[in-house]
Length: 234
Image 1: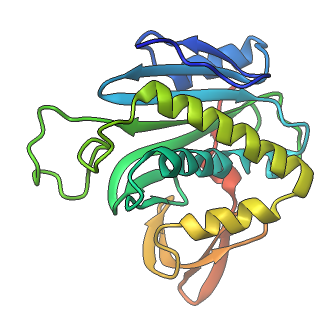
Image 2 (image 1 turned 30 degrees about the horizontal axis):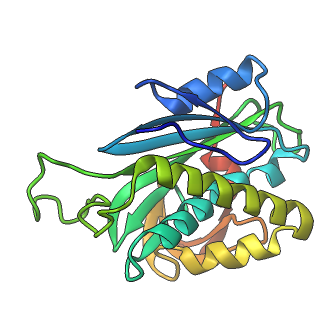
């Protein structure tokens, strides 16, 4: 496979089989340029992560995690079969036609939601093919080839994701949280249902203005902010 081509202000580093998310965190801590994408693409999976440097408090910057997921969905929607449904779970899993097919992660260098982070890394993984897995063995797990993405390549999806990501970051900077909130709400998995997230069980009521999860449990409504999903690496 040829190497990916990224939009202006983004540059790629092939993680060469290492975990791109961990590698991106290490690069961020060393002070690499914002827009650096670490990736690991092969016929069976795609893993990628990007180093960001949002100049806003962490409580606002955390929106880059759901934004990353929206860009994944948009890329799959543009390149995959028209009938393929892609939904995002608030706490990270990515579901394709209802089954688990990947996930999102985020990390930063501070736990203080009011502080401007020195860096923020978001990333995702998607399963492209499981050649040793017979159909029906894992009904709650799937891969993109099984869902009809026979012409989709990991590099092609990575390139598309980077373009959609840049577009959404620009919209977020120019128009605020509104467009992202509307887009993510339409892709949410499990809203209006009962479920468990971050060790808490309740009814998923919806999202606050910063995409935090409103969870109704034991007769009370609690807010789980997106910052709760970020790993803290110092």
